[in-house]
Length: 121
Image (cartoon, rainbow, N blue to C red; front, side, top):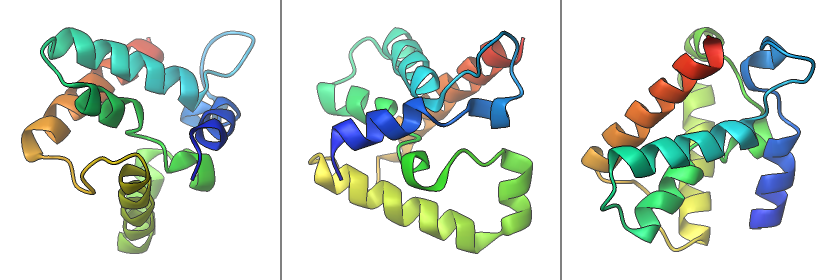
């Protein structure tokens, strides 16, 4: 697991299966940067590790792609299990706790939802 591979892979994965406005697809890498920026606004006292966790919140998608949420639900636990195992491995690779604290997960999710709103409008 190398940061350059994650960045390269996410830059080539289209967010929302490419169903975004504009001439070019919005990438998961762009989304990840947006989430990190929003997270930093929401949690200005966040540590560097917390900021990195926000940036890497969708990092498993460099391997498994960006599956839209309704389809993830249909796939069930096996997809989520794979995604969580990858997320833990990525976190450990970059010296982060394998499981972010509940408060941190909540703030990252909030930034992710705000980003999704902006991406969809």
